[in-house]
Image (cartoon, rainbow, N blue to C red; front, side):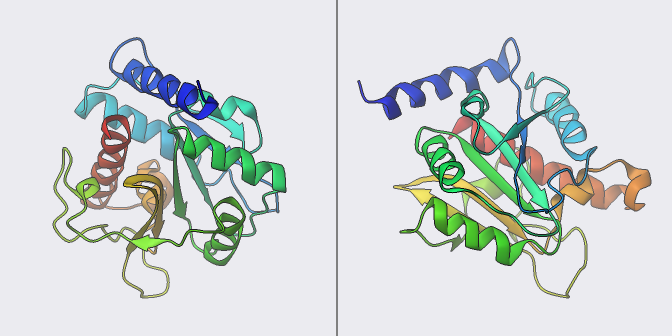
Length: 217
């Protein structure tokens, strides 16, 4: 049996644990000097929200995983964020590619300033692919919660509209890149950015949709 098939079956088993004994999701640690550790309260708050509103059983504390580690295959969902430079080595890029080919999912949320670096490094991962903008009709916007206009705007940076981009393997979305929305800031503790409750709720609902989509696609 091909290794990609074996790993894909493993991901099906791991994802199903989210409804049973619990599964972990992870924050991706990368090189280059960018602050991969941004928004430290974001994922714990998103996990709590998903466990409450989606009846998932995700372990409350996310792991930190290095992009080149074989342990990445233990996580059906990996989050990447930051403000600055990102660098993937050749082996990092290959590991990340194998991860997504095998069924893993990467959500990259631009915390403002990582766009050019993330796009550059993803070309190392999938040199033959381009990011495709997701239309508002895409199922990721219509899971537990409905976003008829597509990705919501959470934080203002450059006055640009929020956008969601994807990389697909055949018809499977394997990488979601959210740009000019800053979902992670909306997931953070209220005291961090002083966002009003309705803004934080909107961000958490979109995050829950992403988790729901990943565990069910």
